[in-house]
Every structure is written in C-alpha cells, then in structure tokens.
Image 1 (spheres, rainbow, N blue to C red):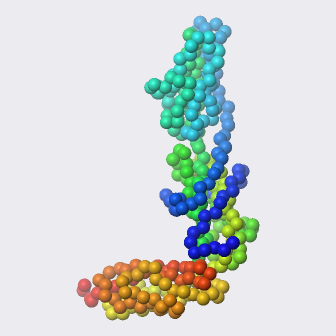
Image 2 (image 1 turned 135 degrees about the vertical axis):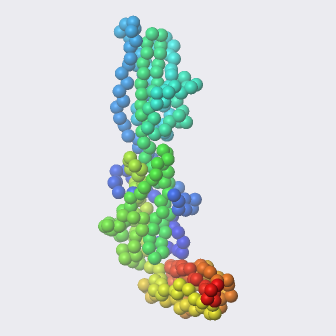
Image 3 (image 1 turned 90 degrees about the vertical axis):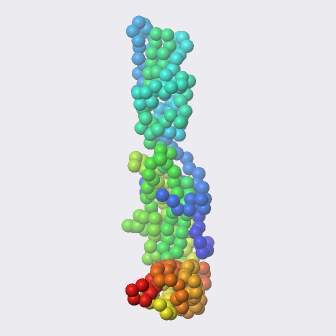
Length: 311
C-alpha cells in the first residue's frame, strides 16, 4: 500500500507469549484493545480459632487471591453460625467505615497489605493478600516515516509506574538484528519492502501484552540533503544553495517551512536568498525537500545575523 506525506497509524494485533519492548501523538492514534492476563498464586489463609470455640472454625479468604489495583476485593466467610462482623485493614491500619463484604478500588495501591478480620460470636478468622503489580498496556502506536522509520508507542500503567518498551523489527518477515530501538535506519529498507515491528511494554516488574504493527510497505525513500548551511553572516545579502538527491532519481521540489521575513527559495533549484533587514540575532530556518511521490526531508538550522562590529 502507498505511503503518504504524514504519519500513519496501523491496527495492532495482540498475542501473548512473545518475549521481545512522557508523549507522542497519543490523541492521533488508533486505540488498541488488549486483554490483561492476571497471574495466579496460592494464598494461605488458615483460620484462627479463639479459645473456647470447640471444634468449629471460621474460615475467611479474600478474593481474588492475586489482586491488583484493577480488581475490587471480596471477603468470603464460611463456618459462621451467628451474624458476621467484618473489619478491613490496610497495612495494619483499620479502614474506617469499611464493614461490608467488599472493598473498593479506591483503597488499593500496589504493594499494600490488605487484611480482613471476621468475627462471628466467639469465632474469629483473618485473611490477608498483597496488591500485586499490574502490567502496562499498549493503547496506541504511531508509525512515522521520513528519512528513517520510527514508531511512537503510547501506553498506560494502572500503578503509575514508568513504562519502557522493547522493539523487534522485521523487514519482509526477516528479523533485523541489533536494532532494538524505536528507530529503523534507512540502510535496512528500500522501496517496496514490507516493515513490521513487534512492541512489548514493560515496567520494573513485568512485561505487558506484546503488540505487532505490521503490513507497512515502503513506497520509496525520501530525498537526501547533502549541503551544509553557513552558521552566520554579517549584514547585506545571504545566499545558500541547497543540494539534495533522491535515491529513486525522482524530481525534487524545494520549499521553506520556517524562515525570517523576506527569505525566499527557488522551488526548482533550491537556491535560498535573503536580503537581511531583520535585527541582529538568531533566526530559525527550516527547508523542506520533497520528491514527486510525496516523500520529504527537512533541514533545520539557526542562522546568526551579526551586526556591525561592537553591536
């Protein structure tokens, strides 16, 4: 499929089990649906029998047995013969007003120790769990192409942890070794290649669900700008000849995206001219070179206009 001038966002296909990865363009990205698979564990909640209770036990367990900040807690009590009174505790402190069989998300943070004490007559039982880490999720990815190919992931972590990403690049389904950043250099792809990147979000404890951004075909490579602009000049007239080539030999069009007032460029030859009437100081210049397929490269520089000596 052809690639246009701007950014492209591709649909993501998620799969679990592939071990491979604050804010770029999240509002322009396609949202991603993902399922988080919670880990399982065995929680010991042996009942505590108060003196004089005979052979009866009050069994208490907190569900789910491996909770995160995304799951409310529920106390299940068995063995009671009289009404049950519940008390919830967080890190050893009583949670005031929480006496129901469930505990809401607003009380949960990663690493908290949550306990529930149940009393029924002369029977007492207690159970505790630790709030586990929630893995990060990948919500969207921007796929960008210019002189290099880049991806800009946007993720979410329920615990507020810092999210990192691992990348695996494939060109025509062949893995590109030693390239594990979000940038694929131009040396690794050519016109007609199909590019895929596999992204895994992770925090300091665990990996999130892996995403595959695929089926992106490179139409052609952008122009290459080879000239270097002067860093400064003193008064008078400024001129600069932009030199660029296109890898596929297409025609080039030169334009100015940002420049001081009065600066012009020849759209066919790339000649830049400016009769400086501005105040001395730095001036930002951005020159764009496009080929006939719509691929482009930008050269950005700061031009220092110097006044007479001593000013």
